[in-house]
Image 1: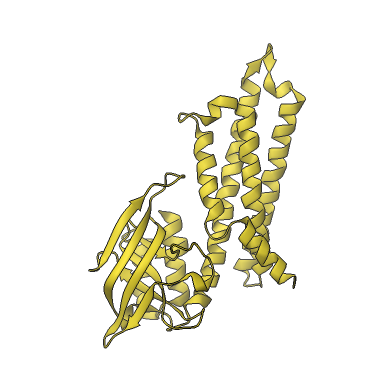
Image 2: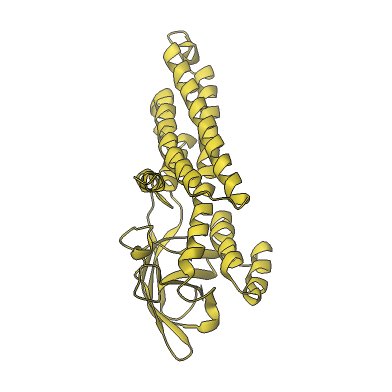
Length: 289
């Protein structure tokens, strides 16, 4: 799972880890020896710091973790979990811990998901972690998470942009081949407009993703660009799926056709790292509204 291990795992370690931690984990990630995932979301489904309720209680040798994480991607095959935990009383008193998936006190339950991807509920019951497993400084984890979740949001925008490009390609090809009333359905204006609208949505999503990705890569302030891109691509991809299904008709809903898989994966990507409403609210806040 590239996205999980590299974007969520390696980038977090690269941003927050000590030199010793980077030397220990990053080479093994790059060589494909270990899988790392991020355990962030919890039952209240918030992307804000006050949504983190899993507690890390300080002990003589480190910390003890207690709480629940939901929808942790590929936890079923991960070697390490980057666990987001509360270590203080204020909203942003958040710390990051790198925890072996096999640690005593961890129990995992695989969840059924719309996108058919592997996600798990993880329960931490008195999981003891040495202080050397802290990524970065205590109570400074949210600063790192804000960077990582912006990267992840744009990564999901890129995934969805690639998906809608494939939907465009398959829809245009289907419109050329499917005949009705003695002619290809692509010769009908309504179908042509469906394809033209999909093409416009695809290009707009790609350009907004590129703009936000470029700003992040240059180290520029990109809160607005990321929020705009994720809000737009979330809604645009849904419109593309709807138009694709309208053009394909019933065959697009069958398990044998790839369109239904793209639709399910896009729905999953839409929700993770902030849905359209979450990012639209962020844009309004940036505009001082």
